[in-house]
Each structure stands twice: as C-alpha cells, then as structure tokens.
Length: 87
Figure (cartoon, rainbow, N blue to C red):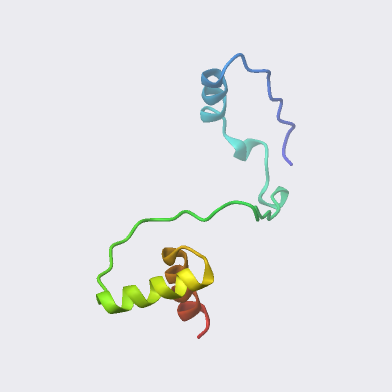
C-alpha cells in the first residue's frame, strides 16, 4: 500500500460518484494489495437468443421438461451446458 486512503462521509450518491470518479487508486494501491474474490451467489448475465429447431424436437423437449417438472427453456439450457462442457 502506497498511502492511506481517507474516505469521507457522503451527503448523497452524486457526491460519492464525483469522489470515486476523480480518484486515482494507483496512488493508494499496489497490485499486490489486491486479492482474488468470488461471488458465488451472483447469477450469470443472460442474453435472449433465437434458434430455429424442428417442431417435433421442441415438442419432445417440452414433454421431457414436463415429466421432470421444470421449464422447457431451463432443460434446453441444461442440454447445451452438458454438450459444451462434457467434451
């Protein structure tokens, strides 16, 4: 650590945003000051896509999802995940 960072009390979010946007953290921190953290409860960012599949295949997936009592789109995501990461 280069020098101690003094963080003031903020009156509102705008004041806090101005403080952080004008601060150069390289004056206060060395790369060795950082440590890896994980956030296991965060949900990954998702993005909608469009995919064309035969109707009979979609119906079969929906039947399987119904039998497993899960949404069919969740089942499709599971199938894609297994296909990508089981190799």
